Structure formats: C-alpha cells, structure tokens
Image: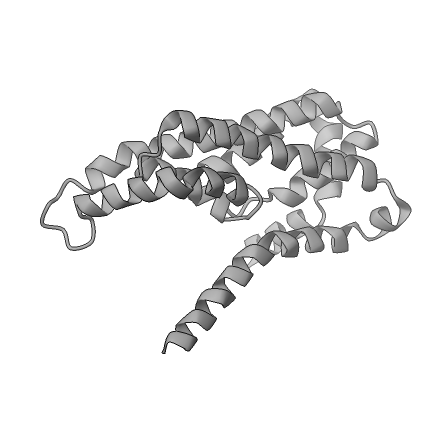
Length: 216
C-alpha cells in the first residue's frame, strides 16, 4: 500500500521530483529520463511508468533553465526509439518459439501468419497512434515483432511516432508550463494529461462493449 502511495505521489508531483533530480544529479538527469522512457516503452513489465506527463513536466523544467531543450528532446526520442526496438526484438525472437508446437490449441502457426498479414496492413498506423496511448504503446512494438512486421517499415513508423510524441509534449510543457495558471494547478494538468492519454482506449472499450450488446 505504501508503494502505491509513493508511486501516486511521484506521478502527481513529477515537477518537484524532477526538479530535485536535476539539482542532485545535474547532467546525469538525462540518463535517468532515458532509462524511465526506455523501460516504459521497451519492457512489457513496466508500462505503468509515467510517459506523457513526464514529457510535459520535463519541458516545463527545461523552460525554467533546468535542462537544455535540444538535449532533452534528443534523449527522449532516442529512448523511445530504443525501447520500441528492444520490444520488437523480443516479439520477433519469441514469435517462432511460441508458435512452433503444432498441437497447441491457441498458438498455431496459421495464427502467427494471420498476425503477420494484419501487422503488414495495419501495423504502421498502429505504431504511430499507440505512441500516444499509455500501456498500448508498450505492447504494440512487441506485437509487431510477434507478427513479423517488416523491420524497415516498423523502424520508420517507430521513428515518426517518437518524433511526434516528444515533439508535441515537450514543447507543450516548455511553452505552456510556465503560465501562472498551469504552474499553480500542475497536479490538475498532469491528471488531465493522463486522462486524455487514456481516453482513446476507454472510447474503444466502450465502442466494443456497445457493439457486443447490439450484436447480442
């Protein structure tokens, strides 16, 4: 319970914690931010780490002189891209091994082939959109690897998604985070960013639920 409380405090007071990290570790804070974004994107066991809100707050701290904006954005884009590629690699490595047992009821080779066909058709679009959706952005690269999406296509759209993600959220924090209302209500702003990030997934869940009820 205490761990959950600490995590909630970390998420809701990212500005205070990040400012403290900058004060304590100086330029090493870029490495810390790299690690957080890399793990949130690249490891399927850590999708709960802050992503969108972290980028916004990092932009706010950079505007106050705590970090260099260019180095910050380069670090975050690189971390997101590396995380995507590690996750893709895990999926690519595990896919043939998970689906090699012909007698399995669920892990059949034809299911892998269908996944591959689906990812070739819809994967690139999903990579870019998923970059803005927490939890989903952690699993889509893995599924792309599992479905053997052509690596060149994956890499191109992964880079595009990372550039858009960082290029929108960090400048938003840089230019708007210093506004008096935003500074005075940053916790509400962080909550708003989290809710907006979760909104596409919630709408999709509601749409599918309604479709099932209509079909029934």
